[in-house]
Image (cartoon, rainbow, N blue to C red):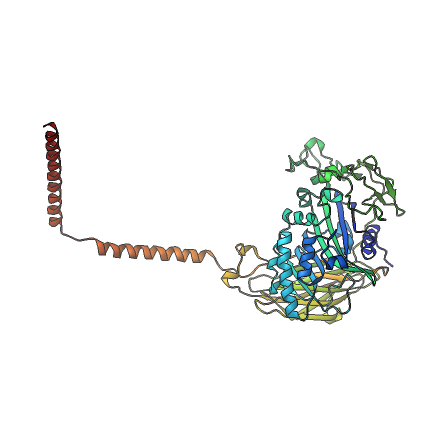
Length: 595
């Protein structure tokens, strides 16, 4: 039986504590050095409010702005994600929180809304997206019917809901949304300490959005440890993977510069080594870093609203116990029994810093291999047709992988489901084409309607052990109206990533495992938008020439050359006589004044 790595298990323990939380507010930070000079930092902030106080709008730790929106939109459970970058599973191992806190590239939102029918649920959904758009300074108001789907088996309720609720699940994505500081600021304002104290004081937009990968999540769900003891819980998470070398650059000198030649570590055993050719020599020592180097600041003490009696330490570091670590005075260190985790407590008003000096790495924190690898790309050429290729790789040599594959396609991408084909490749490299029904156990397909809704496809798949399954299908590209093209039409159109849901593979917990593929860029037939301007310019020129000629004909008088000479002579004579009369009148006027 495959055993989860200690990192993933630590995330699951923290996640399982959400359902049995006894504190009103708790925050934590988990630091995990990763290969290739990377550092994973996982921030978690959890607060709850009793159901009675929530219904009476007496908010203490739960953010009032978000609570009023949820009540107005009849939203019983909410999940919001802001994600940028790509998680490198081959180098970094399993995803934080097993992917349950990760979203698709851009913005992803799904919620359960209590409504009598689908039409009322969609009306409340529009109210929810527009309200959250203003709260988080995001473009969630662009999630309309064409970007909204109703998943069947890809998402499940995380909270405890009453059986009498008539819940409707709605899901929407904005893969082209750019996540920036405008989204981080309202995220921090939802916290009780507003990012001024506690582990949230490390969150700086300059460092956060300079990361290789980052994800912000907001989860709201009801929690009922006992039938008569229910509360509404909000769980906010920030997961980032920072490059240690890039993060250590000072803010006043952020431009990366090449390492001087005398400081390069080169492998001199290479035959092509010379004064101008260097093959980098891999260092066996771990790089030195500190919180001040990585985040540009220290932790400003503990948040005074955090529960001091919680059985969870606010800061944990995942390095071998023999590794040397320096912390600020007054911090209490506790080493866990797994041999790789040490946690620290924070003093109320004492800044906390953590430093790891450069030292030889004799042991490494083990990283488990991902349960499944997935890749999704667009194939084909031309502006009319194309194809989709999805590759599933099962690295296990003994166990098959069962999962749910969910993807949403825009309405202008029209798939041909009858062309769905499957190809399986074993470890021996033998490739054979088999019917897709051999791997697809169940399927749900909801075709698109032009300008009303997109395509929804959900498949229950099974990939045999030590095998790679490739699914392909063809699609057709629609031609849009010229008013439906964005200003950067030649860039292409974003296609939302696919969502893969797997069950727990260790059998010890009920939390699913989620994987999201990368987003796609679809090229559509695009007209030459310069032609209308060319037509306008040409038409205006013709009209100007015609109008000028007609205007000249109407206002000008045509005469012969002799008539023109006579008119000119008369004009010269008249001007001379006029000047003579003016001079005479002037002289008479002076004489009259003298007398």
